[in-house]
Length: 530
Image (tube, rainbow, N blue to C red; front, side, top):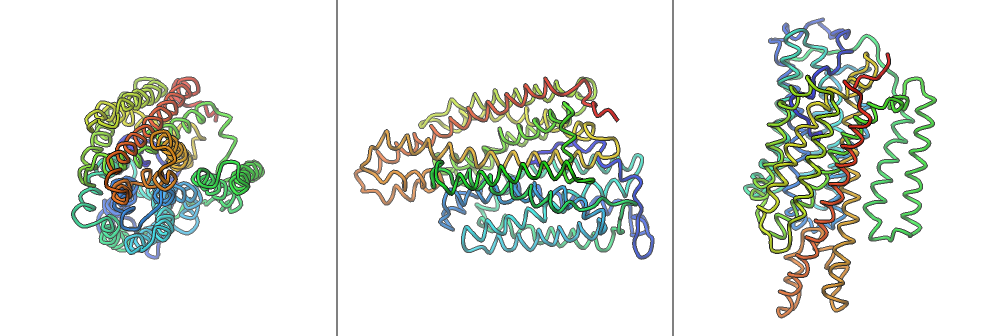
């Protein structure tokens, strides 16, 4: 989540934009457009909408599955399609804003997001929903990559600090209430309304932007790195596709080996191209700096360890325990709410201690929270997860706030926006990779457990697909009456076994991230040497 940002994350963001110039037809400023705070309102409304869609979808997935008869792969793509395009387009759309004008590009992002949201809400098949989610991620990337640049270009001095603080509070609040909003809309109006609700919000944002926000162009714009963008996107998409399809096609199949090999090749060529480009999309020379690597490890680790698990937690709460979408959202709320509360506290604390302390401690707390979640079994109530939820929320908040500041310190002083963009990209890559990789482990574990418990008397592959995709109740009703109890018991035990394994893997990912932060991040994270 980003996406999982806290209120302190914006400190130092886009200092390079202080040299920007406002260029519109009338040469006006924000004040002359009717009030200095209108640009902030427009940006916060749009960013609230795009970040809400990262978490709001999770609790609607079981309803989406039932309505569209979606496979487990399709459910994974509902999350990953959005995360992939949000990651792949973030760096290049920031450059587009520099070249074409940030107001124009930002407005385009809002419109793309709104139109694709309408498409998501009207989708009649899972494939169409996944396609529109990918377009939605593009619109989100355009907005997110230009939002802080607009604020940095519009406000100075004390107003600048106020604007960034409100922006940070908005991002934190959107992530915190996402599960609750998604649950309420899905339960009250249906899952399609989690997308339809974006339309009036987007219309309000566009009206404010057109009427109140002057055009903004920096004095100097970087060149577009088209080859880098194409190769980076191809590597991400091919890699995630291979991970998602590996179980069904077979990990040793020619198709999967070819796809994963092509992903590795695209990534290798991307590295070569970026090293030879004067203005690369991702300057790989940054990776020579230990603190830069540590910052990206923290971003990837917090996203891959906890946020990648929301899909499976939601399926457990709704399909195994039987809660509604609203009920599931309420039970997930402790994670996001505590992350929101802990972030500003951690932000103030990180001003007094080395960055590696809150980052390492936060990831370690997430790891401990995930270990506590492994106590769940087939007969558990949701409260068994609550101690782990509380710790994970605190840990996420401890990571988010200092990580936002650190991401601007580990790059050259004139490129803090680039640092933040790279860090946000690693967050989204962490979510996309985790959802795909966890899905492979999850489905494989369920299949193995079902075969052990039921033998070969049942169509194990069909049952495994149903259990992992949230269609357990549907498939149990198709089983002969006398076998339903046994099949349901075996399916629930298999689901929990798969979930426990994911908790362990997530804890390891968070623990490794904590270790890397402690080892790599310098005293104040500033080892850029410029």
